[in-house]
Length: 72
Image: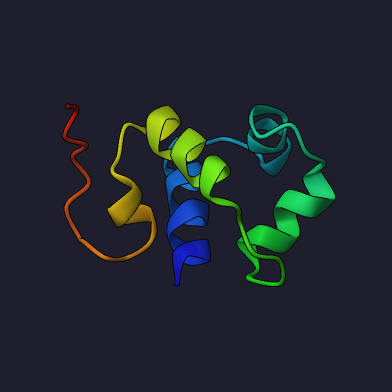
């Protein structure tokens, strides 16, 4: 599920939940619920995370195992 991927991406960068919550303009508590799969993430936030981590949205959504983002 996507929530495992976003947690792994955050941990790979040694970031805290509050850091990503700030990026997404939400609270740490809300972001924690997203990472646990208790709250759905919106498409615009998936895009923000993909850009921030320089990965494809497909990677975050587990539609692909390739991290590389292909810019148009």
